[in-house]
Image 1 (cartoon, rainbow, N blue to C red):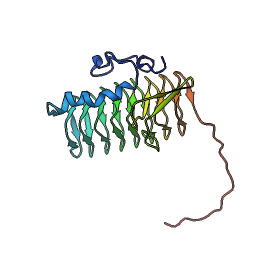
Image 2: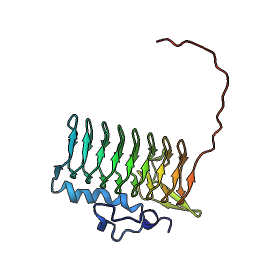
Image 3: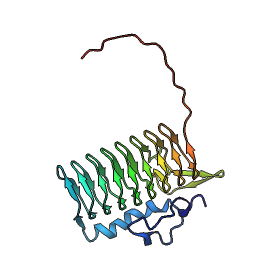
Image 4: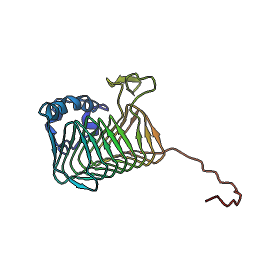
Length: 237
């Protein structure tokens, strides 16, 4: 159950292709299916459609892509296909969308953020200067500024997830994080490769998480802040 698709995502209709999940059991299967799906959808028919409104300098578009109506691309956005972007998405200046990414409707990608080989359900938001790699964000999930979803182990072996003492191989050496519906990753938090976070869970800022995090939890690291006296020194201009 704790690996199942329905544990993390109950709003499959908040996705441009809801039938895409047919026959899928585990949440981790989403990432395995993304590349072949985009190959059929965009690469083989050589799709290059951009229906977005551009604000500022023109975006840098490479490869195959589909960008839906009502979407706004700000200056210096880079999109490297194959990439699918839905309707009414806002992508802020300097953001980079890398191959294998599907972004649902009404999402937001912040300034300078990078998204790689990831899936965003409708209403998901990524704030500024974050890295979302090989990751799935559920409906209305939130990723704060400076968040890193680490997506590869140091030894380059397959990502794993341990549940009830049993280690599950996730089938790939590139695997970031599963983030359930309406969960939040606070500013400058870090997730280790293979992390699974249930829906409606808040990971507070500056917190590192790994493994399985259940639904409807608040996760934070206890911190001790020290304060001492300081010299008065006029700093050089």
